[in-house]
Length: 503
Picture 1: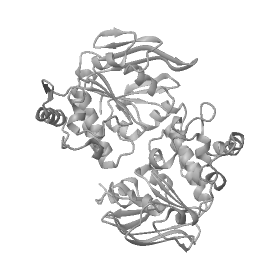
Picture 2 (picture 1 turned 120 degrees about the horizontal axis):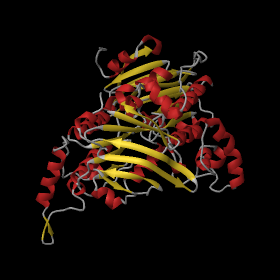
Picture 3 (picture 1 turned 30 degrees about the horizontal axis):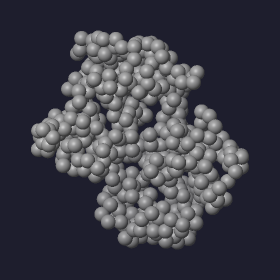
């Protein structure tokens, strides 16, 4: 893919020398950025590099301390939210901002409902919403309530709303995070449509392969300053990572002890509706087995079933050779099985508690005591922070204030300190930066080296190739193939998982 700057006369957005400090700490240091109509411009950087602050400055949430922002040839020393919108700058954040009780049509036209006198013209609302969606190639029933939409559909509706409002500079923050492969493809297709319509897209993502596939140009921030800005065609994944981190980040498969002969986790004949049908897998102690299949197949239901949150229609489960009843969370925990969700915000962490409280939450002593002394909590949590590489800027903040990578380390750490016999890990590196991903891979390696049986459900073929000893391929909920990871290539793995043949 090549940059499209040759198709337009000049930049629609020019940022020059933008600086922003908070409490004496510089979040942005003289940032320059050019954005052209009809291009996808990826804004890259580690957590804390300044991406969010720059987005907030561009969208008017924060005002720059120094520097100028030029939109369509007119310079501005600072923007407010209202002014940024009036200039066509719109942001679709990672946390969706729809009115979930309203229909798609009402959300698309929110604040601009056509009326006759004091009466809303509902037919016109639906017709205009259909036009806004169809103009972007989006096929969603405008009469549906927003709360019934998938995350990908919610993103599409937000994009349509912002474009209809006049957004010609669209900032998309992690638009494919927590999406299946199929839904992520839908979002990327929509982004390309926006580019072809002349919209300037700022694209923020931690997924290196995705960025290299979709972006025309790249700008990398590190420690609040621009370190690289170049056409995507002139960059490769290794150089991009090096620019982001400031050093080479190598996540190589280590030498681990050979798995033991005895089984740590065995699942046989697991069935649950049409999604899971006669799923079978066995994981030896010290082994990592990955589960791959089309998006939405059996691997997407395993957390609820193995953790005891849902009872299957049929099947049997053994942990360390002992039978474990399904549908009972306490029984699953008592067996030594630890299930780590891929949805850390909703199911994995308690957002109202601090970093240290979350780290200690799974420990028996603290799980049974509602009250504890802060000093004792800090003393016991400190070595866990160190062991799992959890970094907080100051003190003991709410867990939600941490970066995605640090939140994920807390999530893993709180369970791995409970001496598991077997673990089920669901997308353990979803939505984290490359350095955090390497750290998390090391934690999973160490878990297996301790003799824990690890069952891994990952949406990344690269992650499976890096971590797994074996891969189990599922189709229509059934185990259809097993491969030693050393006997299959990445392309063969992807093709097999999709039910096709490698090209």
